[in-house]
Image (tube, rainbow, N blue to C red; front, side, top):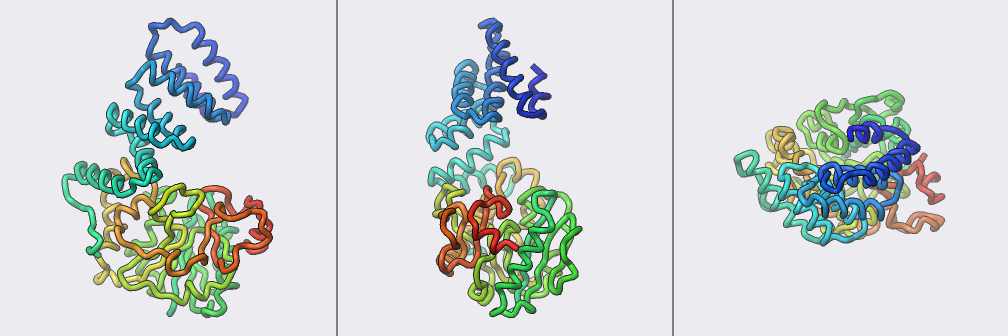
Length: 383
């Protein structure tokens, strides 16, 4: 049975070999070997997912939970596959079953967060997971909606997800399109764990090291840290993901000032990659930096609470944007302030010869990314 742990690290030919061995094992297993039977079905389902046969994976996982109804991992993976198919009610049922069996299973909590939001039950997700986090910590932490000219622009680069070319191209695009707002007034800051190849000889482009201890998209949180805030040159702050393409003038965005104490970001409504309404998307964020002594409690909550309790929070929350929805119950939406100025690539017509009229910024959450997006106009602007 342990062979499958090794096969999961090998190439496609080994996955095909794994499928043949699983089928052979299922054929000879005694009907009373329930534990090994459902585990084989579960492992074979993982093979099917790897090979792109999700329909077969769903069938195998359904057989696995029928044989062993208390197989939490099988319920969790079945919920994930059903969610992709849009069968949200069935997915929620299996996710609840997994959590009833294994209340501490992180993957089941991660799936539940996504499922509730896609089902239009975002507030329920927020209340549920604040309750779990507070119960685990033994204290009340959740915020309330009332608790809370020159520009610093920041972005994040970590690991090998984005190379230096992403930083250099984004900086060049900002400079090209910020002429009306005086590009000389922009302080472009890249938070990174590897500054090699980044054109820091360019005026107004500099790098700050990422703090250790954060992974993946949680690194975004560092833009709200006192350490970074103290090193920014201006109070007006704009964050953009590195996988962003600037296609028009930034004068409107850069000329606007967020009211003090507020954060402005994108709403998920209409985003093809998000598949949910009423949520937050942090591909672009704007706020006013406050001096540490005057920082509103809601700003401190976003960064400091997670820094202090990351191990506990990350048992329940997987996505950075979900954390923002919990920590910032009141935000401004850039979509309302500047309709059509920031758009999502996946929501556009890839056959169109140009980006939409009036668009200045195109964001690329999930897939594709600018380097492999098929629309011809992307490469014209991403340089």
